[in-house]
Image (tube, rainbow, N blue to C red):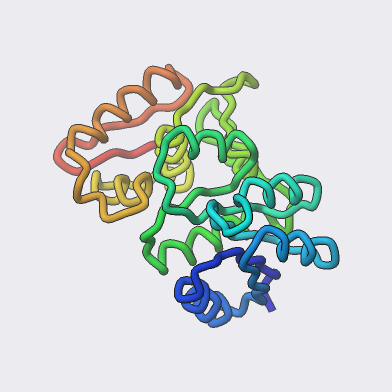
Amino acid sequence: MKPNILLVEDDTMIASGLIYALEQESYAVTHCQSVAETLRVINTARFALAILDMQLPDGTGDQIHESLQNMNTAVIFLTVVDDEGNIVRAFESGAADYIIKPFRLRELLARVGRVLGVSDGGNAANLMLGGVTIDISAGKAYLNGTLLDLTALEYRLLLTFASNKGQLLTRGQILENIWDSTGSFVEDNTLTVYIKRLREKLGDAVNIQTVRGLGYRVD
């Protein structure tokens, strides 16, 4: 049996689909529909991962996240709130991921697996890329020990490269990783801008190579 997952989602249609999909992956799932119900549950049980809706009938997912801070529970926010400020605050508060509705089920399952795989039941792991250390559980990156000031999308872009070192990534593959939708509304120049900004912040610590006509690679 894989780790226990807490799912906090008040939309019963979304919840039922997620429960079925997660249980098919052999996860044990506990479902709650409100902040009050969730707080009662986490007082008596422990979870490797909590998937939290941001907007609940009696409060927010942030309230639950605060209560989980000392329980070694990784958190993924699952929400309709597509606001960069909220995304940044979520990562700064220690969220492992932030997924925007509507979402693709296979992508969510992949992210769940990634978070649980690196957190190992709550023991956070780091990814190294050149001179950069990425603390995945905290959603932060450090250059020679100094915290990098990254936007949420820049952080996702860095994490995408770190998770695929040595591999050629097409622009389409990268956009799918840093945007939680099809990416069809994103102008192609958007990725070029974020690559440029990330390069400026990383300096010589990470070499993001442009493979002309194909995409990017980081060795």
